[in-house]
Amino acid sequence: MRPVHIFAIAGTLVLAGCGRAPRDGGFSEVQKMVDERAGLTVRWDQGSADDAEARRSVETLLAKELSAESAVQIALFNNQQLQATFEDLGIAQADLVRAGALRNPMLSADVLFFAKGPATLEFSLVQNLIDLITLPKRKRLAASALAAAKLRVADAVLGLAQDVRVTFYRLQMATQTLEMRRTVVQASAAAYELAKRLRDAGNTTALDLAQEQDLLEQAKLDLASAEVEVADQRERVNILLGLWGPQSAAWQSAARLPDLPADELPLEDLERRAISANLGLAITREEITYNAQRLGVSRPFALADETMVGAAASREREGDWGVGPAIALPVPILNQGQGAVAAARSDLRRSQQRYAAEAVAVRAGVRMARARLVAARARVVYLRQVVLPLRQHILDETQKHYNGMLASPFQLILAKQKAIEAGATYVQAAGDYWIARSGLLQILNGGSAPVSMDHAVSTTLIRSGDQGGH
Image (cartoon, rainbow, N blue to C red):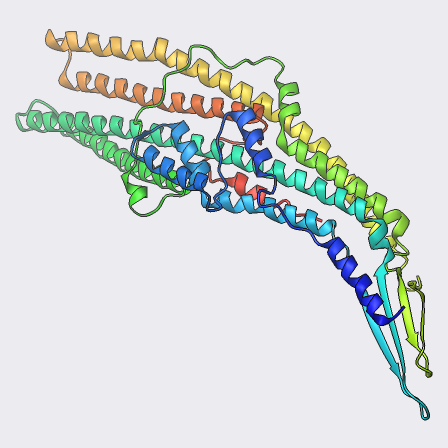
């Protein structure tokens, strides 16, 4: 065999190891997963005709009054952080292609010069033997990593949808509260003006006037806080929807929260449903599979991971070529592979323990979400059936007493203020209900359990990009 034959072998190995990553990266499976679980439509913007249609859909939705669900759809098409998360699929798909490709063979050449006679040429072409043997296992590892990436991306989609709903409901709560605060300021201003006239006429005390002014000033402070809250929540929505420039200022939201649905979500067998649907647990299961496979690869090949086999050719002085097999074995003096095996074993145990911990958290989370929903609905119903009618009855009776000159103007204004405050409490309770309902749906669809009722800041997308890999 001449050196040209060695180069021919090398070319064959290179062609055998070549692969090309599909553009889709498994995104169609993510689309199907999200649609089946939550009925959501999502697009990965890669410059296609469908992507252009998605952008037109965003413009159409923004031209209308936004609801929580239309805001979610805009975010799924337009949120730049989510689009960046989709690239994780391309990276995982590329890793799968690389896992199915052989390492490049090593070609070495030696030239030996002699005092007398022509020089001797020696060639060798070797390939990592373990690389050849473990090729199928490496592909299975990469396939498991790709499956986990699909689950993480789907979880990011569900998480973004939840963040949008919560923030949008908070915007509606803030908007309705702002309108009530304006009404309170108007009522307090009227009371203060009346008190000043009565004081000027000598029919009230300086203390009464100061108390009315105090109520007015507090109402103004509450109004200013409500205005800031509306502006803050609107910008949070802009962030989640990926809006800036004229788009961020032009859209309008439905000002009022929806009424409570007549029928509540099914609340039976929640723990089993949450465990079976949870994407976080599915991701950890893939990690367990990955780490178990990695341990299976590490154990038998810990000592021989650098073994090389191939062919060698040598040209003698007389000009003839000699060809034969070549092998290079590592000498396990300094490193016997214990570290690789120990790390793989620890990764496997860690992922198993993490799965158990996450399952406990999912079960607790769904119970918390159920309790929040039941309590929030009961509070809304109580306010609507008891507190609001009672405050309205007090206001009506006070109005009758005022008309009959049995109640002072201040008593009437105070009754109006209390009725308005009860309305503000009802708005807060209704918003908490919709947030609690969305949180329970999020868990049952497989998303992460909401831990608190704090403002949403799209933490799901951050989590999705912090999973790491091997």
